[in-house]
Length: 433
Image (cartoon, rainbow, N blue to C red; front, top):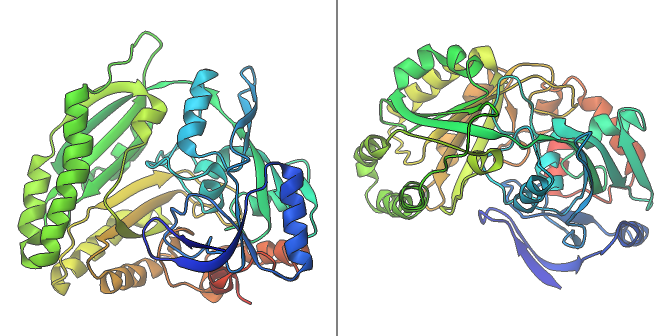
Protein backbone atom coordinates (compact mmCIF):
# COMPACT_ATOMS: atom_id res chain seq x y z
CA UNK A 1 0.00 0.00 0.00
CA UNK A 2 1.23 3.52 -0.78
CA UNK A 3 0.50 7.21 -0.36
CA UNK A 4 -0.11 9.57 -3.26
CA UNK A 5 -0.26 13.37 -3.45
CA UNK A 6 -0.46 15.77 -6.33
CA UNK A 7 2.17 18.34 -7.27
CA UNK A 8 0.51 21.30 -5.59
CA UNK A 9 -0.46 19.49 -2.40
CA UNK A 10 -4.19 20.10 -2.85
CA UNK A 11 -5.07 16.37 -3.05
CA UNK A 12 -3.74 13.17 -1.52
CA UNK A 13 -4.68 9.53 -0.86
CA UNK A 14 -3.31 6.87 1.48
CA UNK A 15 -3.55 3.08 1.66
CA UNK A 16 -3.66 2.77 -2.10
CA UNK A 17 -2.84 -0.39 -4.04
CA UNK A 18 -0.37 0.57 -6.77
CA UNK A 19 -0.04 -1.34 -10.04
CA UNK A 20 2.36 -0.75 -12.94
CA UNK A 21 1.32 -2.74 -16.02
CA UNK A 22 4.01 -3.12 -18.66
CA UNK A 23 1.76 -3.65 -21.67
CA UNK A 24 -1.75 -3.01 -22.91
CA UNK A 25 -2.66 -6.64 -22.20
CA UNK A 26 -1.47 -6.32 -18.60
CA UNK A 27 -3.37 -3.07 -18.24
CA UNK A 28 -6.57 -4.66 -19.57
CA UNK A 29 -6.22 -7.56 -17.15
CA UNK A 30 -5.59 -5.15 -14.27
CA UNK A 31 -8.68 -3.09 -15.06
CA UNK A 32 -10.89 -6.14 -15.53
CA UNK A 33 -9.76 -7.68 -12.23
CA UNK A 34 -10.42 -4.48 -10.30
CA UNK A 35 -13.86 -4.11 -11.84
CA UNK A 36 -14.80 -7.72 -11.08
CA UNK A 37 -13.76 -7.18 -7.45
CA UNK A 38 -15.83 -4.02 -7.24
CA UNK A 39 -12.78 -1.83 -6.68
CA UNK A 40 -12.43 1.79 -7.79
CA UNK A 41 -9.46 2.31 -10.12
CA UNK A 42 -7.71 5.44 -11.34
CA UNK A 43 -4.84 5.91 -13.75
CA UNK A 44 -2.46 8.52 -12.36
CA UNK A 45 -0.05 10.54 -14.46
CA UNK A 46 2.28 13.22 -13.11
CA UNK A 47 -0.24 14.53 -10.59
CA UNK A 48 -0.05 18.03 -12.00
CA UNK A 49 -3.80 18.70 -11.82
CA UNK A 50 -5.01 20.85 -8.94
CA UNK A 51 -8.44 19.21 -8.81
CA UNK A 52 -9.18 15.71 -7.56
CA UNK A 53 -9.64 14.34 -11.07
CA UNK A 54 -6.95 11.67 -10.68
CA UNK A 55 -7.21 10.92 -6.96
CA UNK A 56 -7.24 7.12 -6.51
CA UNK A 57 -9.67 5.59 -4.02
CA UNK A 58 -8.50 1.98 -3.95
CA UNK A 59 -6.34 1.05 -6.94
CA UNK A 60 -3.83 3.39 -8.58
CA UNK A 61 -2.49 2.49 -12.01
CA UNK A 62 0.77 4.13 -13.02
CA UNK A 63 1.56 3.98 -16.71
CA UNK A 64 5.35 4.23 -16.55
CA UNK A 65 5.52 0.94 -18.45
CA UNK A 66 3.65 2.52 -21.37
CA UNK A 67 5.89 5.50 -21.96
CA UNK A 68 7.54 5.44 -25.34
CA UNK A 69 6.98 6.33 -28.96
CA UNK A 70 5.57 3.17 -30.52
CA UNK A 71 5.48 4.23 -34.18
CA UNK A 72 6.34 7.35 -36.14
CA UNK A 73 5.59 8.01 -39.80
CA UNK A 74 7.46 11.08 -40.97
CA UNK A 75 5.60 11.23 -44.26
CA UNK A 76 2.12 11.49 -42.72
CA UNK A 77 3.16 13.00 -39.40
CA UNK A 78 1.19 10.31 -37.54
CA UNK A 79 2.88 9.22 -34.31
CA UNK A 80 1.58 6.58 -31.88
CA UNK A 81 2.75 6.94 -28.30
CA UNK A 82 2.20 5.12 -25.01
CA UNK A 83 -0.22 6.90 -22.69
CA UNK A 84 2.31 7.24 -19.86
CA UNK A 85 4.83 9.22 -21.92
CA UNK A 86 5.50 12.62 -20.40
CA UNK A 87 5.46 15.65 -22.68
CA UNK A 88 9.15 16.42 -22.19
CA UNK A 89 10.16 12.93 -23.33
CA UNK A 90 7.60 13.03 -26.14
CA UNK A 91 8.68 16.36 -27.62
CA UNK A 92 12.36 15.40 -27.51
CA UNK A 93 11.49 12.08 -29.16
CA UNK A 94 9.49 13.78 -31.90
CA UNK A 95 12.42 16.08 -32.63
CA UNK A 96 14.54 13.01 -33.37
CA UNK A 97 12.07 12.24 -36.19
CA UNK A 98 12.10 15.89 -37.30
CA UNK A 99 8.49 16.23 -36.11
CA UNK A 100 6.73 18.38 -33.54
CA UNK A 101 3.34 18.99 -31.98
CA UNK A 102 1.59 21.95 -33.58
CA UNK A 103 0.86 23.55 -30.22
CA UNK A 104 1.77 22.94 -26.57
CA UNK A 105 1.05 24.39 -23.16
CA UNK A 106 3.73 26.05 -21.08
CA UNK A 107 4.49 23.05 -18.84
CA UNK A 108 5.82 19.70 -20.03
CA UNK A 109 5.68 17.64 -16.82
CA UNK A 110 2.32 15.99 -17.60
CA UNK A 111 1.83 12.63 -19.28
CA UNK A 112 0.28 12.89 -22.71
CA UNK A 113 -2.86 10.99 -21.63
CA UNK A 114 -3.30 13.14 -18.53
CA UNK A 115 -2.79 16.33 -20.51
CA UNK A 116 -5.39 15.52 -23.13
CA UNK A 117 -7.87 14.05 -20.63
CA UNK A 118 -8.05 17.31 -18.69
CA UNK A 119 -8.13 19.63 -21.71
CA UNK A 120 -4.60 21.03 -21.47
CA UNK A 121 -3.96 23.72 -24.10
CA UNK A 122 -1.52 26.32 -25.27
CA UNK A 123 -2.38 29.52 -27.09
CA UNK A 124 -3.13 30.39 -30.72
CA UNK A 125 -6.21 31.93 -32.31
CA UNK A 126 -6.14 29.37 -35.14
CA UNK A 127 -5.11 26.38 -33.01
CA UNK A 128 -6.82 24.04 -30.57
CA UNK A 129 -5.71 22.33 -27.39
CA UNK A 130 -3.64 19.17 -27.22
CA UNK A 131 -6.69 16.91 -27.60
CA UNK A 132 -7.40 18.34 -31.06
CA UNK A 133 -4.11 16.81 -32.21
CA UNK A 134 -5.29 13.28 -31.30
CA UNK A 135 -6.54 11.30 -34.30
CA UNK A 136 -6.98 7.92 -32.58
CA UNK A 137 -6.69 6.36 -29.15
CA UNK A 138 -6.91 2.98 -27.45
CA UNK A 139 -9.22 2.93 -24.44
CA UNK A 140 -9.30 0.08 -21.91
CA UNK A 141 -12.83 -0.14 -20.53
CA UNK A 142 -14.14 -1.68 -17.32
CA UNK A 143 -14.77 -5.11 -18.84
CA UNK A 144 -11.16 -5.36 -20.03
CA UNK A 145 -11.96 -4.56 -23.65
CA UNK A 146 -9.60 -2.38 -25.67
CA UNK A 147 -11.50 -0.01 -27.95
CA UNK A 148 -9.60 1.55 -30.82
CA UNK A 149 -11.35 4.87 -31.33
CA UNK A 150 -11.14 7.44 -34.10
CA UNK A 151 -13.45 9.58 -36.21
CA UNK A 152 -14.19 6.43 -38.25
CA UNK A 153 -14.13 3.73 -35.56
CA UNK A 154 -16.33 4.12 -32.46
CA UNK A 155 -16.73 7.82 -33.32
CA UNK A 156 -19.10 8.51 -30.41
CA UNK A 157 -16.52 7.17 -27.95
CA UNK A 158 -13.83 9.19 -29.72
CA UNK A 159 -15.92 12.34 -29.31
CA UNK A 160 -16.17 11.69 -25.60
CA UNK A 161 -12.80 10.10 -24.77
CA UNK A 162 -10.38 12.73 -26.00
CA UNK A 163 -11.33 14.84 -22.96
CA UNK A 164 -12.95 12.51 -20.45
CA UNK A 165 -11.34 13.34 -17.08
CA UNK A 166 -10.55 9.62 -16.82
CA UNK A 167 -14.22 8.72 -16.37
CA UNK A 168 -14.60 6.32 -19.31
CA UNK A 169 -11.61 4.02 -18.88
CA UNK A 170 -7.83 4.06 -19.08
CA UNK A 171 -6.12 5.26 -22.25
CA UNK A 172 -3.25 2.96 -23.20
CA UNK A 173 -2.01 4.63 -26.41
CA UNK A 174 -2.72 7.64 -28.61
CA UNK A 175 -2.02 8.55 -32.20
CA UNK A 176 -1.11 12.19 -32.73
CA UNK A 177 -1.21 14.24 -35.89
CA UNK A 178 2.16 15.94 -35.77
CA UNK A 179 3.76 18.51 -38.07
CA UNK A 180 7.28 18.94 -39.44
CA UNK A 181 9.59 20.31 -36.75
CA UNK A 182 9.66 24.11 -36.78
CA UNK A 183 11.39 27.06 -35.17
CA UNK A 184 9.62 29.87 -33.35
CA UNK A 185 10.70 33.47 -33.03
CA UNK A 186 9.85 34.46 -29.47
CA UNK A 187 9.31 38.14 -28.74
CA UNK A 188 8.73 38.99 -25.10
CA UNK A 189 7.99 42.58 -24.21
CA UNK A 190 6.39 44.52 -21.34
CA UNK A 191 3.64 46.88 -22.51
CA UNK A 192 1.04 49.08 -20.80
CA UNK A 193 -1.92 46.92 -19.81
CA UNK A 194 -4.34 49.40 -21.37
CA UNK A 195 -2.61 49.04 -24.75
CA UNK A 196 -2.75 45.25 -24.56
CA UNK A 197 -6.46 45.20 -23.73
CA UNK A 198 -7.30 47.82 -26.38
CA UNK A 199 -5.39 45.87 -29.02
CA UNK A 200 -6.20 42.38 -27.81
CA UNK A 201 -7.82 41.14 -31.04
CA UNK A 202 -4.98 42.51 -33.14
CA UNK A 203 -2.41 40.81 -30.92
CA UNK A 204 -4.32 37.51 -30.90
CA UNK A 205 -5.02 37.42 -34.65
CA UNK A 206 -1.71 38.90 -35.73
CA UNK A 207 0.50 36.22 -34.16
CA UNK A 208 0.65 32.44 -34.37
CA UNK A 209 0.74 32.24 -30.56
CA UNK A 210 -0.05 35.20 -28.30
CA UNK A 211 -0.43 35.42 -24.54
CA UNK A 212 0.12 37.94 -21.81
CA UNK A 213 0.68 38.05 -18.08
CA UNK A 214 -0.57 40.88 -15.87
CA UNK A 215 0.60 41.43 -12.32
CA UNK A 216 -2.36 42.75 -10.29
CA UNK A 217 -1.86 46.18 -8.70
CA UNK A 218 0.21 47.32 -11.72
CA UNK A 219 -0.35 48.89 -15.14
CA UNK A 220 2.11 46.63 -16.99
CA UNK A 221 1.60 43.35 -18.87
CA UNK A 222 4.29 41.00 -20.17
CA UNK A 223 3.36 40.04 -23.73
CA UNK A 224 4.63 36.91 -25.47
CA UNK A 225 4.43 36.59 -29.25
CA UNK A 226 5.67 33.35 -30.81
CA UNK A 227 5.69 33.07 -34.60
CA UNK A 228 6.97 30.52 -37.08
CA UNK A 229 10.00 31.57 -39.09
CA UNK A 230 11.01 30.89 -42.67
CA UNK A 231 13.28 28.07 -43.73
CA UNK A 232 16.14 30.55 -44.18
CA UNK A 233 16.13 31.58 -40.50
CA UNK A 234 18.52 29.75 -38.18
CA UNK A 235 18.08 29.07 -34.49
CA UNK A 236 19.39 31.78 -32.16
CA UNK A 237 18.57 30.57 -28.64
CA UNK A 238 18.73 32.65 -25.49
CA UNK A 239 22.29 32.75 -24.16
CA UNK A 240 23.05 30.42 -21.27
CA UNK A 241 23.62 33.22 -18.76
CA UNK A 242 20.65 35.32 -19.86
CA UNK A 243 18.44 32.22 -19.87
CA UNK A 244 19.49 31.28 -16.34
CA UNK A 245 18.94 34.81 -15.04
CA UNK A 246 15.51 35.23 -16.65
CA UNK A 247 14.06 31.72 -16.42
CA UNK A 248 15.62 30.29 -13.28
CA UNK A 249 16.85 33.13 -11.08
CA UNK A 250 14.06 35.67 -11.64
CA UNK A 251 11.15 33.40 -12.60
CA UNK A 252 11.75 30.80 -9.89
CA UNK A 253 14.27 31.61 -7.16
CA UNK A 254 13.60 35.34 -6.76
CA UNK A 255 9.88 34.83 -7.37
CA UNK A 256 9.77 32.27 -4.54
CA UNK A 257 11.45 34.77 -2.21
CA UNK A 258 9.08 37.61 -3.14
CA UNK A 259 6.08 35.36 -2.54
CA UNK A 260 7.42 34.38 0.88
CA UNK A 261 7.80 38.07 1.63
CA UNK A 262 4.19 38.57 0.54
CA UNK A 263 3.09 36.00 3.14
CA UNK A 264 4.81 37.93 5.94
CA UNK A 265 4.06 41.43 4.65
CA UNK A 266 0.92 41.34 2.47
CA UNK A 267 0.75 45.12 2.45
CA UNK A 268 3.93 45.13 0.37
CA UNK A 269 2.43 43.12 -2.50
CA UNK A 270 1.53 46.13 -4.69
CA UNK A 271 5.07 47.45 -4.32
CA UNK A 272 6.55 43.99 -4.98
CA UNK A 273 4.46 43.63 -8.14
CA UNK A 274 5.46 47.10 -9.31
CA UNK A 275 9.12 46.15 -8.93
CA UNK A 276 8.55 42.79 -10.65
CA UNK A 277 6.81 44.39 -13.63
CA UNK A 278 9.63 46.92 -14.00
CA UNK A 279 12.21 44.13 -13.84
CA UNK A 280 10.68 42.52 -16.93
CA UNK A 281 12.88 43.24 -19.91
CA UNK A 282 12.28 42.67 -23.59
CA UNK A 283 14.03 39.78 -25.27
CA UNK A 284 13.90 38.04 -28.65
CA UNK A 285 15.23 34.66 -29.67
CA UNK A 286 14.64 31.79 -32.12
CA UNK A 287 14.54 28.17 -31.02
CA UNK A 288 12.84 24.81 -31.53
CA UNK A 289 9.11 25.12 -30.94
CA UNK A 290 8.91 22.86 -27.90
CA UNK A 291 11.74 24.76 -26.20
CA UNK A 292 9.93 28.06 -26.74
CA UNK A 293 6.51 26.79 -25.64
CA UNK A 294 7.58 25.21 -22.34
CA UNK A 295 9.12 26.77 -19.24
CA UNK A 296 10.35 25.48 -15.91
CA UNK A 297 8.04 26.32 -13.01
CA UNK A 298 9.12 25.38 -9.48
CA UNK A 299 7.19 27.85 -7.30
CA UNK A 300 4.16 26.03 -5.86
CA UNK A 301 0.80 27.72 -6.32
CA UNK A 302 -2.93 27.21 -6.63
CA UNK A 303 -4.66 27.88 -9.95
CA UNK A 304 -8.13 28.36 -11.37
CA UNK A 305 -8.70 28.82 -15.09
CA UNK A 306 -11.87 29.50 -17.00
CA UNK A 307 -12.59 29.58 -20.72
CA UNK A 308 -14.88 32.41 -21.84
CA UNK A 309 -16.11 33.47 -25.28
CA UNK A 310 -13.22 35.39 -26.78
CA UNK A 311 -15.31 38.50 -27.38
CA UNK A 312 -15.94 38.76 -23.63
CA UNK A 313 -12.39 38.46 -22.32
CA UNK A 314 -11.57 42.17 -22.00
CA UNK A 315 -14.82 42.87 -20.16
CA UNK A 316 -14.14 39.96 -17.79
CA UNK A 317 -10.64 41.26 -17.06
CA UNK A 318 -11.95 44.74 -16.30
CA UNK A 319 -14.46 43.28 -13.87
CA UNK A 320 -11.84 41.09 -12.23
CA UNK A 321 -9.51 44.06 -11.85
CA UNK A 322 -12.31 46.14 -10.30
CA UNK A 323 -12.96 43.36 -7.77
CA UNK A 324 -9.27 43.09 -6.85
CA UNK A 325 -9.02 46.86 -6.35
CA UNK A 326 -12.18 47.01 -4.23
CA UNK A 327 -11.57 43.86 -2.21
CA UNK A 328 -8.31 44.74 -0.53
CA UNK A 329 -6.94 41.31 -1.52
CA UNK A 330 -3.23 41.21 -2.29
CA UNK A 331 -2.29 39.02 -5.27
CA UNK A 332 1.45 38.48 -5.87
CA UNK A 333 0.93 36.02 -8.76
CA UNK A 334 0.23 37.18 -12.34
CA UNK A 335 -2.97 36.57 -14.30
CA UNK A 336 -2.41 34.73 -17.60
CA UNK A 337 -4.50 35.20 -20.75
CA UNK A 338 -4.43 32.91 -23.81
CA UNK A 339 -6.65 32.10 -26.81
CA UNK A 340 -7.82 29.06 -28.79
CA UNK A 341 -9.84 28.20 -31.88
CA UNK A 342 -13.21 26.46 -31.55
CA UNK A 343 -13.25 22.67 -31.73
CA UNK A 344 -15.78 19.81 -31.77
CA UNK A 345 -14.67 17.77 -28.75
CA UNK A 346 -17.64 17.24 -26.45
CA UNK A 347 -16.06 18.34 -23.15
CA UNK A 348 -13.45 20.70 -24.55
CA UNK A 349 -13.51 24.11 -22.92
CA UNK A 350 -13.29 25.55 -26.45
CA UNK A 351 -16.06 23.33 -27.85
CA UNK A 352 -18.10 25.27 -30.39
CA UNK A 353 -16.72 28.73 -29.73
CA UNK A 354 -13.65 30.92 -30.21
CA UNK A 355 -12.19 31.04 -26.74
CA UNK A 356 -10.04 33.07 -24.41
CA UNK A 357 -8.58 31.57 -21.26
CA UNK A 358 -8.06 33.51 -18.06
CA UNK A 359 -5.91 31.75 -15.46
CA UNK A 360 -5.57 33.16 -11.97
CA UNK A 361 -3.01 31.98 -9.41
CA UNK A 362 -2.18 32.35 -5.75
CA UNK A 363 0.94 31.35 -3.84
CA UNK A 364 0.31 28.13 -1.94
CA UNK A 365 1.00 29.72 1.47
CA UNK A 366 -1.61 32.45 0.94
CA UNK A 367 -5.42 32.07 1.10
CA UNK A 368 -7.03 31.77 -2.31
CA UNK A 369 -10.73 31.06 -1.66
CA UNK A 370 -12.14 34.64 -1.72
CA UNK A 371 -10.23 35.48 -4.90
CA UNK A 372 -11.16 32.26 -6.69
CA UNK A 373 -14.83 32.52 -5.66
CA UNK A 374 -15.07 36.07 -6.96
CA UNK A 375 -13.49 35.04 -10.26
CA UNK A 376 -15.88 32.10 -10.59
CA UNK A 377 -18.87 34.37 -9.96
CA UNK A 378 -17.74 36.83 -12.61
CA UNK A 379 -17.13 34.28 -15.36
CA UNK A 380 -20.47 32.60 -14.64
CA UNK A 381 -22.14 35.57 -16.35
CA UNK A 382 -20.34 34.61 -19.57
CA UNK A 383 -20.88 30.84 -19.54
CA UNK A 384 -17.34 30.27 -18.28
CA UNK A 385 -16.09 26.70 -18.49
CA UNK A 386 -13.49 25.59 -15.91
CA UNK A 387 -10.34 23.76 -16.86
CA UNK A 388 -10.98 20.18 -15.71
CA UNK A 389 -7.65 20.03 -13.89
CA UNK A 390 -7.78 23.41 -12.14
CA UNK A 391 -9.67 24.54 -9.07
CA UNK A 392 -13.40 25.24 -9.35
CA UNK A 393 -16.61 24.40 -7.51
CA UNK A 394 -19.01 23.66 -10.38
CA UNK A 395 -21.24 20.60 -10.33
CA UNK A 396 -22.92 18.49 -12.99
CA UNK A 397 -25.96 20.78 -12.91
CA UNK A 398 -23.80 23.83 -13.66
CA UNK A 399 -21.77 22.10 -16.34
CA UNK A 400 -24.75 20.65 -18.18
CA UNK A 401 -25.85 24.18 -19.00
CA UNK A 402 -22.41 25.05 -20.39
CA UNK A 403 -21.77 22.00 -22.59
CA UNK A 404 -24.28 21.13 -25.35
CA UNK A 405 -23.00 17.52 -25.52
CA UNK A 406 -22.87 16.95 -21.76
CA UNK A 407 -25.70 14.40 -21.66
CA UNK A 408 -24.25 12.63 -24.70
CA UNK A 409 -21.04 12.21 -22.72
CA UNK A 410 -22.94 10.79 -19.76
CA UNK A 411 -24.71 8.31 -22.05
CA UNK A 412 -21.35 7.01 -23.31
CA UNK A 413 -20.15 6.76 -19.73
CA UNK A 414 -23.24 4.80 -18.69
CA UNK A 415 -22.57 2.36 -21.49
CA UNK A 416 -18.82 1.91 -20.93
CA UNK A 417 -18.70 2.05 -17.14
CA UNK A 418 -22.17 1.26 -15.73
CA UNK A 419 -20.76 0.24 -12.33
CA UNK A 420 -18.50 3.32 -12.04
CA UNK A 421 -15.17 1.55 -11.77
CA UNK A 422 -13.42 4.81 -12.68
CA UNK A 423 -15.29 7.20 -10.43
CA UNK A 424 -13.97 9.21 -7.51
CA UNK A 425 -15.18 12.22 -5.54
CA UNK A 426 -14.31 14.63 -8.35
CA UNK A 427 -16.18 12.71 -11.06
CA UNK A 428 -19.20 12.55 -8.75
CA UNK A 429 -18.99 16.33 -8.43
CA UNK A 430 -18.73 17.12 -12.13
CA UNK A 431 -20.74 14.25 -13.65
CA UNK A 432 -23.15 13.43 -10.82
CA UNK A 433 -23.81 10.12 -9.10
